[in-house]
Image (cartoon, rainbow, N blue to C red; front, side, top):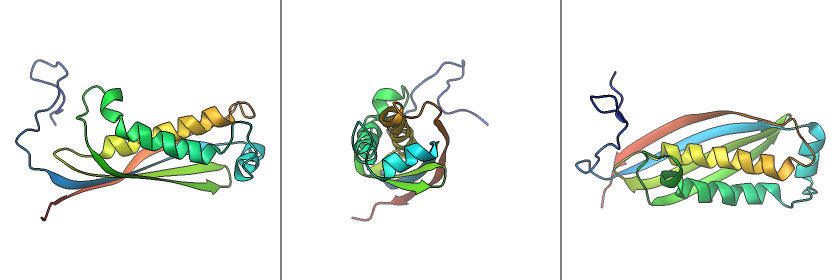
Length: 151
């Protein structure tokens, strides 16, 4: 299997997508942050010292998803049409889900993955004063799709 971001001499390169047609593209990513029960309760009751952690994490995730090409060196910049970020409070933490949508010549999975990652990091930052044992993990692409654009 040949890597697309490596040229024949083994050097990293940005892939040329100029000949690809624009397509409707979607990607869904997920992740999780594990919190102490007391931290989860503070978050659930919106009693964290820094404020509404979920609202801040949602905005941070959307902002990061739109800036993915600035963070990941070989990503192409995409005009994101939608980035939906959802949180599910579960027994041991928060499950994070991000769905990214665009019309473009390349996939939008890095944007969904970046959104999830930054949401988790933001939650970590918002909770670190009360919980020094949080764990971020299980970040994965769940699905991606592309369809022709019908005008």
